[in-house]
Length: 339
Image 1 (spheres, rainbow, N blue to C red):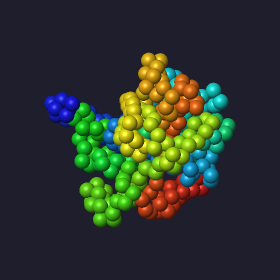
Image 2: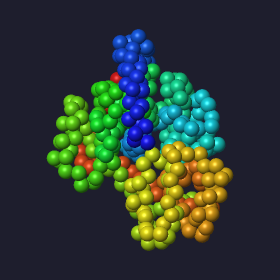
Image 3: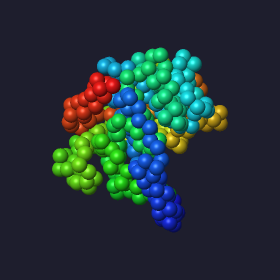
Image 4: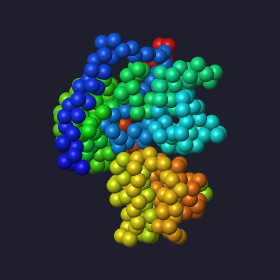
C-alpha cells in the first residue's frame, strides 16, 4: 500500500494543482462565496478524516447552546436520503448519517440538519420560523461556496497536516496553504501530558500567527446502552468483543482491551449489512459488545440491547480552555449584537 501511494505521486501533484486553482478562483472572487447575517463556525481539516471533528463539534454545542439557539449542519456522509433534511422524531442514522444522528440523540435542545449543499442548508435553516442564532458547519473547511465567519482547523498530533502531502500519496485534501484560511488551529488527540516545550515545537512547525490550541481525547468511565450502564473498570477484566467502524480505532481498542478479547474493525462510516450483523453475533455469542458511540447509532436496532454498549468520548483541552471558550463566545456574541 505504501509503495502504491509512492507510485501515485504524479497524481498527487495533479490533484494539488487542481485544488489550488479552485482555491485561487474563490480567493479572487471568480467563483462566488456566500456570506450570511448569522454567526457561522466551520470545523474541519485538511486531511481525510480521523482528526476528531465529532467530539470537537460536541464541545462547541455544550459551550454555545446554553446561551444561544444553535444548529449543526453536516453533509450527512453515507446517508440514504437526499437534499435538505431537518432531524425530527422520525430521524435515524440512515436518514441523517451517523454523526448528525448522534448529535440529534445527545442534544435535543439544538437543531440538526444535513445538506450536501451547505448554502442551501443554511438558507433553509435561517428561513424557518424557529431559526437558529448560530450555525456549526461540520466538516466544511473545503466547502468554499459558503464563507463562514469563523474557521477552526483540526490536525492530529500524530499526523500533522504540515508533515503530510496530497492525495493519493498522502492524506491531504488540499495543499497545506489552505490552513491560512483558519482563524485558529486545534492539535487534537495529544497525549494529556504533552509538555509546553513540545507545544512550542509544533507551533513553530505550523508557522502561522493564529491561536493554536492542544486537545486530547477523554474517555468516559462508563459504557452505556439504552437500558443499562457498566463501569469501565468492571468490564476491562471481562472477555468481550470490541467493535469499531472509525478512521483510527487503535486508541479505542487500547483503552478497553484485555487479553483474549475479540476485535472487529470496519471502515469509517460503515453500513452494517445483515451478513456483518450475523458475523458479529456469532463472534460475540453471550459476551458483551462494546463499540464507539458513532457505531452504536447504526447498530442499536440490530443487536440485543442487553449485549451492545458504547463508550462516549469528549474533547478536552490540555490547557488554555478558558481562552478558547472566550474566543468562541466573543465571536458569537459580537456577531449576534451587530446583526
